[in-house]
Image (tube, one colour):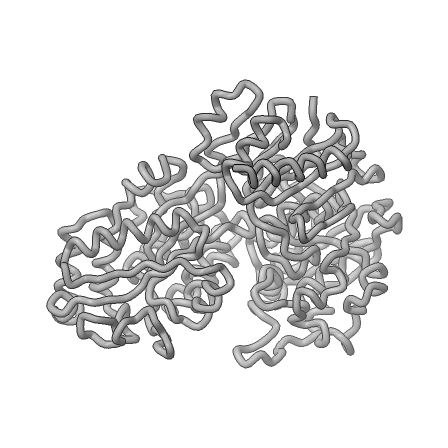
Length: 576
């Protein structure tokens, strides 16, 4: 406890010693850490929840809407009706706003926009967000093949993203329904002359490969920023896990009312609650276990059950397990003391696990009802789901029937032993695996499941190597469209399907049809067909779509939650 108050005292001192009028300042406490200030590198929610306040995009979301886009750096939202989307649905024209200033005082040009998009495409760091624009613009998910060799043509990219007068014109490989939604979140615009002067890519064909897949620390923009957004980064202290934002008084849409924002990582939930109650934090990402206490505090507002574009946790089966030096497969044989490499290739076995999970209890008890039952990859708000969307229910009798059928009775007769893995800190992911373990093991004393939490870097490495027989993870949307869920979960080139060794060519066909279909009713019909096709494969166990939670001091006003942002857009906020 003494250490807790010492930490709290140091943080309060830091804030008090550096912030101006309290009415103009906001202290924000959250979990997780910033990764990099380079917008083409970082792909985590904490970083991008901050960067939306520093970098403008071509378009932005209107308040909390997921579908209503409004102009930002582009003065118009392209439509077929206004002539800014071509008849074939492939070419988009963006008139670039004049008079917009970067934080260093220089004026934004269409070439800055083009450079920013090309750099986002071609940097393509491993595990980064470049695929979000690579897929619609160049028709690929990576600039490199499986051997790490560069396979995209710079000239093709340069033709696809070009400047025509005061406009930036982008031609897609094919029609791509969610393209504008992606740009509203991921078209961060940086100053080309400033970036080049710091040692970033110079924009030429001759040098771009040198800047492909760079390391985090090697980026000249790792700790530097120069956007046009309503706030600019004054300081990022990696040691203290804190960021200070200052208002951009020259912001093209008017100066923010808040003049300083202090952002700080605090992992201990009780410390966060204490800071909020004492007024040492204005905004906090709190633990659900403190909701009732805080709701009774007259000085605190709790924003609970906020919509989120999230599916988490999901439990995955690996079809072809990498057995090399693998501690999670026991003996590596079907002998009751382990499992073979192709253990989860048997559909009856997978069905046994799917029927053994208590979906309702997990939502109502473990999650305290803070979410919605997940029937598949995408939340209800993105794909309207009804009783015709097939899904599994908790049924131990059916689970037993399928386990007895698996491998012609061998599984039931001999049993098995293996490990389910989750990432440390993933509390709900751990609880979900505990529920599954408990229900499966009580069906047959020969069924043995171990659980193991590993650090996030180790978890990612084990996933990439297909070393985890079964694992628990989740997905938060990069943009507000069903494609951003169905592709990573079900497409043969999707992040999770690849990690599972899951490939169904019929899935790929439907996913490609759906993303190119601009008629919403037809798209939804395709996703329904895809959903029920996925159900028959029985490759993934979906649990819930969790909701979000923020708590704020009551004098904080102007908060609007948009689940796409992964954080808070501070521009409309103020304090009374």
